[in-house]
Amino acid sequence: MRWLGPWWLYAIAAGGIVGGALHYSIVADADPADPVLNYAAVAADAICSTLDEYPTLPGVSGVISAVEHDSGFDVARASKVVVLAVESTCPRHLPLLDRFVATWAPATTQAQVIV
Image (cartoon, rainbow, N blue to C red; front, side, top):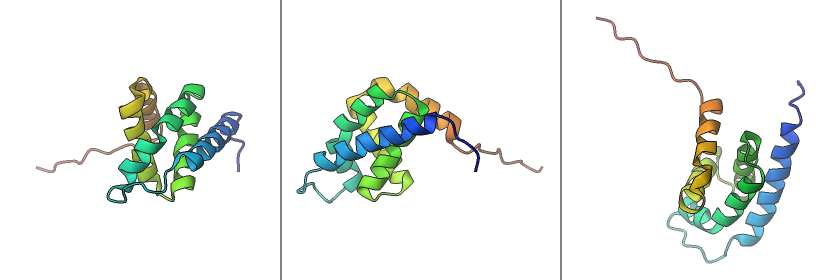
């Protein structure tokens, strides 16, 4: 395994901070009809404050990991929580999320049309 560099430490720290904040901010009587939407609404302040402190790609990764760990959601749902929280509470971080997607999303291939 190769050394990932000091950014990994920031991601772990951000994840720990968000995980702790999310754990104590989740309310027990949240509406189970849409758990992703409810989680995003309840955790938005913690997500945004963490991104304020760690406005980096590793910070985004740490926040997503913290949501995954705390909620039990898979990475797709955890990512959706982060996007919904940022859109509703701190849209100033949308460019950061766009950079994260541009950096880490798998490259799409264009289908070739055979005529």
